[in-house]
Image 1 (cartoon, helix red, strand yellow):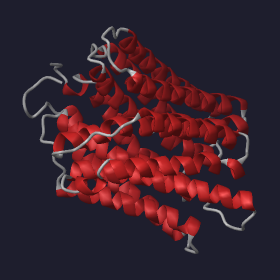
Image 2 (tube, rainbow, N blue to C red):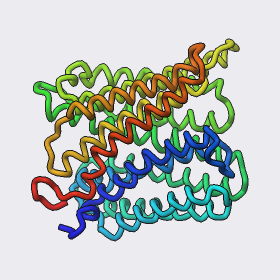
Image 3 (cartoon, helix red, strand yellow):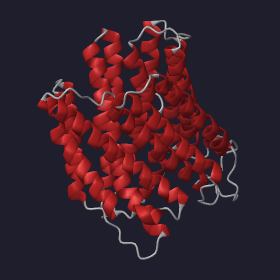
Length: 394
């Protein structure tokens, strides 16, 4: 075991950086909205990068460095790879924050961030390529490809800043949502939600056919293409099938039975947000196609980001942190309440876009979201630098 527990397992440094970013990225954005912070980037691009690339990838990579070798019974990722990639990405984020008034330093920070991400993907692909056992590797490769497209999106953002290109910045955000995070989270849910459920519920039948999943991934690709082509009136052709398939999985995965186990229920409930987001996207696009005077605004995006990604992050990161620190896989009252407060924050952010409500709801949403993650970090971040409570390595 490492003399310094923080470096003893790959999820530890990534989760610590992700925990820090979960607070900093939101606080930074709220400071920008209140005029305390001035930046040389467009507001939408700044917010998009902070959430899609500055915050979530640390948890994604920490999870994949841990889970992907286990999925294929492969060799663990080397310490140099996970420390080096986490270090470069973390340093890049620091430079990005400190240099928002200087385009040159912003580019340097983004370049460090991209370099660390590329290093991580190279390490993970080596693990996959070394696999020689006859087994199903569709899920591991799916997660690798989706996360690699996140690297592409991060690189597009770097190019967009360097060339002062609004088109590249917008494409970067579309890639981040529809080619990176949505396919990745759908793929991980397809594997992990029924598997975790089967581990704790008796007489449970695992349902995870691949054909519906491939259909969902194709729909994500179609939505991304239509969005980047500014054909938002046509995205319903992808969004509504996505909603139907998501609802089908929800109906087959036993959400009602999950409530007996809080840590499991969080994953099932988070997946419901995906259906909500896809319905909102589809109805809003269909209204535009029909020429109706209604739009869901950014409600679908925040249902996807705060609802699906955010809630799933709390559920999955809490589970990994507990299990890999030697603690019981039990959701205590604090975590349970934080999870539900995160749902309230998502609803507060969505409501003003679809109902005649004041914009104060948006500020309240941000403050509640920040509060939730502050308390979550206080509870779970120390697990990244403390030794395992059961004395085992890792």
